[in-house]
Image (cartoon, rainbow, N blue to C red):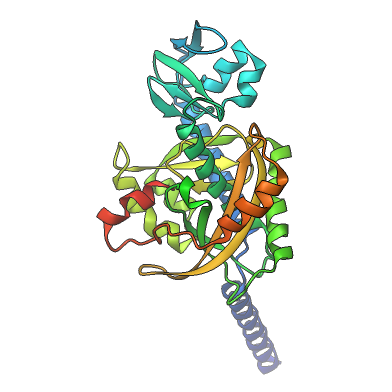
Length: 340
């Protein structure tokens, strides 16, 4: 009986070890999904955002002097809590819908970024006499949205890793996102490009706000630990920050990415949105990538569909000459990394 019991225990132990070995092999070979990674980033973002709000233990008042239309006025707002969007809410509903950015003491400022001191405030929109600042923020925001499209468009078995996008160059005719799509030599058809376009186009109805958050390097590294490109880019990005130890991230719905900003107020300000082409590029630091290109128009701007479809979209499909992502020469790469 003793020998029988011993053999039974050995058999049970052997079966247990085999079970755990199979579990380990399963977990190690399990495909990481973008949906899981995106949820993890949102959880970290919300935790860090709550931590930073908790640091504001006393509500202090600041004076915000508004210049420009519809009138010049002064508002008493809350330091580190009130945003330009909140100021617009006190003035005119139309301002909350049309204002893409704000100028705070002459500095471009996100609509949902808390104000930090007494300041002069002016709102920017796409029909200003000089819309350059708003247009650049719009172009950068569209690259950000393109990252959302790429992370949500494909089946779970295709794990997409976003790399970066070059500085906005409106004269090039297209905004860009460089990424590893994990799709081999895939050449999208026009139907597939239209499917990608519709994902971005539908965001207009969601009215997602672009929320800015400056986080410590350790939080950024945890947030993007599943992306080999972002992990490599975080240290040089942090070195160029004001503190030398922080990284600026943005949230739009359940999509979070690194960007120096500023970005526009909301996805409702993006009207037409088209993914026009996907080209192969080679990065000296990151290897083969896909350069995904698109074109879009602000909701405020009207354009005939013939002009958009026959001129702007074909032009946006031509290879964009923007710099490829690289980390080998930080001095030449400064402008590229700052576009994040």
